[in-house]
Length: 484
Image 1 (spheres, one colour):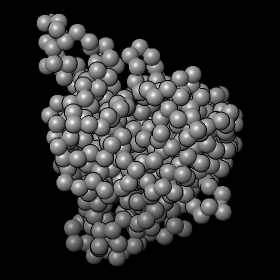
Image 2: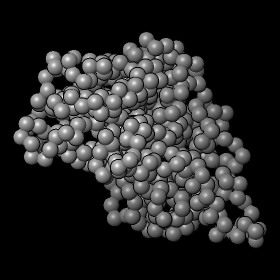
Image 3: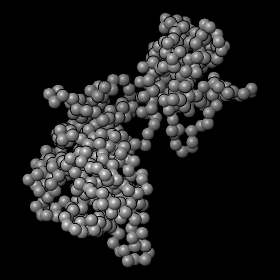
Image 4: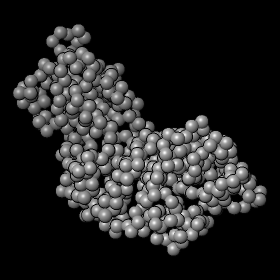
């Protein structure tokens, strides 16, 4: 039987994956020959603690309820089913009915997981002669639950792995980045998908749609590079799929995979927390290559493109803070098309700040990049002037910032930045992009082509203002701009 729980909200899935627990109710509390109830209670407790919604027979059926219909509704409203395989369950027609529905869902939907959790009083050889013989349990995921694990309320490792996969498939389904990579892999041959998945440790036998999702998740998993003399599994996996994709999808897969694999997830979480603050959105990044900055903002955006970012020049002098604030205001106003401060309908400065916040809600925060080691006075002045911008100071050393109200982002080491650059370059070549004369992940001296900055090779590359935002002209910080 099953439990009465509220249905997921209309218009979207439940925030917690629902797992139907099928078990026999013939056992009685304190019955010495059976662990059904102990196992059920331990399973429910552990599922709830792990963020799942357990659905079972507690306080559900009332007299006169059409129990078979209710069971079917609950099973079809769940994302997985766990069969507590006890001796009582093997003899239960009701459990057989529930298992048949769950098995049918498993066959029709590769995302649906049907897991048999065998209790100690059952031997596998007995299943063929049980009431469950119509269910091909040999095709169902099965794991053993030992007495000491039940008593200690510990789930078997195999079940924990299955739960991780259920969580992956049925939570955060709205991730634009994962959706973009999954869609981009649509033209890859099945054997290439399978080979790439094997290289990244995804070895389950899955149908094509689920395999693409699992491969997308594996490609977007943070992973440290191995020893330099050993082949990189990420690059090898990309080598299986990128050559058979069209250019734009291949670029999407290559770019996102490398960034998500190498940029610390902790830094993305820091930036995500900063963007939600009411004011004082200030961060410091230690980086020596321009591609590192873009990679951090791409990783933090959660989308297939980085947050919009504008760089302003810092000029020394007694009025540096005032001039820098003016430069920030002009650059952001030009980017937003907000230039008429005197228009009463636009409400001047107050309207400008509202426009910044509205844009942040719609498209992500506007990031102003300042290549300068901040001091307390400068940070205080800019925080007060631009409470809704994300001010990102970029320096060349980690741990050098003290006594300022700012978040220092988890950095890459210099060798980590170099490895990011090399891996990105390899991925771009596999994606069919010609090797850059000067790599996109060059050092941070903008406008100096000999250093291979993002502006290298542009018609104005040698000018002092090259690489700075210009109203009406896309530049390297415009969200639509990409290296040629």
